[in-house]
Length: 392
Image 1 (tube, one colour):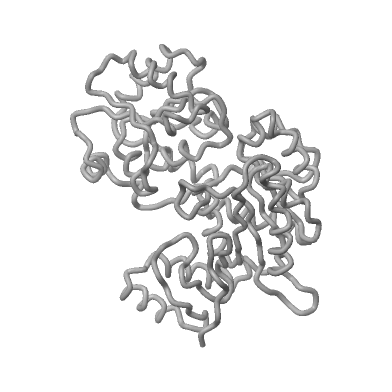
Image 2 (tube, helix red, strand yellow):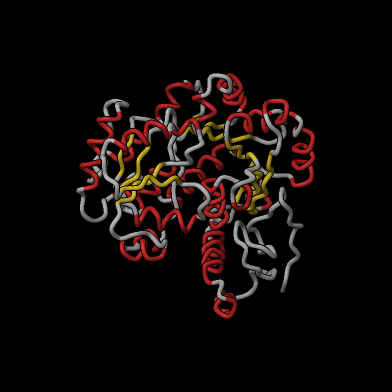
């Protein structure tokens, strides 16, 4: 028996529950609406025919986890039903699906646990741009009737808390705490939120929340692609086998990433067969392949929260050199082939790069991530407990 699905738009995505949308969450493979009365074998066979196995894996995970009650909420004596959540975050024009990848990945995993989601994307700029979205957000809450709202970044959290009908969980990612102009608004969100999530110890220490908070870095997806050999990755990305490649942790034109320091450190190596590559304009798959192909990743940022690029490089076994920023020290502690600079001196960074370039093979970064509980599924299970705590 087929079930009808909600409308699908840039700012309105229904994930999970009792049906799959015509386009599954954060994927572009067309898939018809199939009710979960359909047996798993039929779903798999259909997916094989349409070359959509990855989608059905997510569907099957959702089906099995949902049956176990992972995403269910108690509704008095009437039993249980699927948990409904609105995710509030900034509209990202240059990203696939127009949201930050770590938000999309987190939503996908929670959807797989049986949580029903809709996105509310904010396209305004500055505090006034966010506040103009209050009425549309209230309208969305009235129409959708969620159990809670999960806001990403402090300004989104403040906006979400200006309605008081449903509880709000706010995650702070770093820029909303490190920026002194934004911090006061984030502190307002902290006081109003039912629960606050901080992605690193450093921003937690700056924020100094008074109540109901958790230290929980964003996780990453673990995939077979991250195990690609350097030779194969270079071949697929059309890179020169004879050159040394150092990945810069972002775009050169992002002032916070401090590209001039990276360029100066690399120049001191005085190697004409070396290239500093900026991570800009690549797909997620290409970024993973670059991390498998590169000889090192270099981070020189002025500020960070819990940088995903470090965790992604660790998952690919890419050696890392970084200034002491965000939670990088905690993440790479004990990982062979990874170093934290004691200073921001170009000479020290250059010397550490020399050590890293002599490193053979992949690091044990993936094992460290799993040991730290930073597989996205491990993080999602902790978030689920936070959700349930807010609904008690």
